[in-house]
Length: 259
Length: 205
Image (tube, rainbow over all chains, first blue to last red; front, side, top):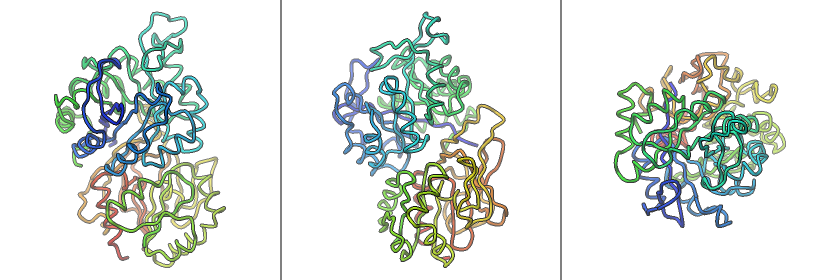
């Protein structure tokens, strides 16, 4: 049986892993390569590395960091952060990343999803999205609107529509990172995660709000997610991947238990 | 020397890095001569079968691949590389492939919408025959998969491992004489995947 994936997320600024709540109040958590090795050895199934200021600073992604992570771990990882051209996708993949995560720039230029999928294969192209609850049901019938640029901009785009469109364009996987639950540790936003998981045929990753194993179980069982992103509770040492996996395994969730 | 065949089908960096991690000399190459002279050949690939076959043809790699598989060079197919060793892939409206292994490559057709396509993630491989490439690796270990199509050999004799997904049990590992091929990615399957690659390096069929 295909196991559910636990994916630690490393938000990197100037080659340091940071963690903030709703993209604010960032604190330093250490070296991305060291953390990648720690989590990989600890049993994570995949990793995501976001160069979170590349986009705002209008600079290319830190390729040296991508290369160093690739040299140090033997599991797949995705890289995101302001990737807007095929050339940059190619550089990141050749540095050893398995997947490219696109988010804000795909909203601005959806064609990049298809171009990337055709050039490198759909499995390489992950669409990240940051939906937020809205009362504007006329524009966003699902009740969720896509935000961009680190939650700063509202787009008026319906989250479920956008997920369907991204799938049609060639996205191989969709990460649903809820603005409403990000950093709260109160659990994932199950409603939008499920709406999207049920709307598309590609795997969906729940993100934002992981606080304990029970939250991951809800994401898998209730919200139909195929994988879940975990950050804060690992970074601070509140729990470990092995501990989360043990609890989920005991609860009957298929997990990779040997690594 | 181990040749890693580069036919512009996806990213070979992780394959190369895995061999680095094993301190094994491996050369990524498009050169037919290098492939013909190699002690071992790795035939990886991700992407689509149609363009993969076109690239192989344009790079004049089809004959060298056939030759090394026919004459006994230890040969490891990975993912798309494995799929195009078969006669025919259903991908890209039907793609005649290399025909080195008898069988075809259909697409997953899940009845349950919760079985997503592509299959992405870690899934178990259950042994159906013993093979030296799995020495020291426990039965039902998990490996990393990313694929929408799967190998369906004509003959169960070549199947050495199977995996369950989308209401079926498919051949995730096949072997015939000097050829061994996996649908999963050993190069991305952590310590256990490295062990498989190490076994391949030490394998003398």
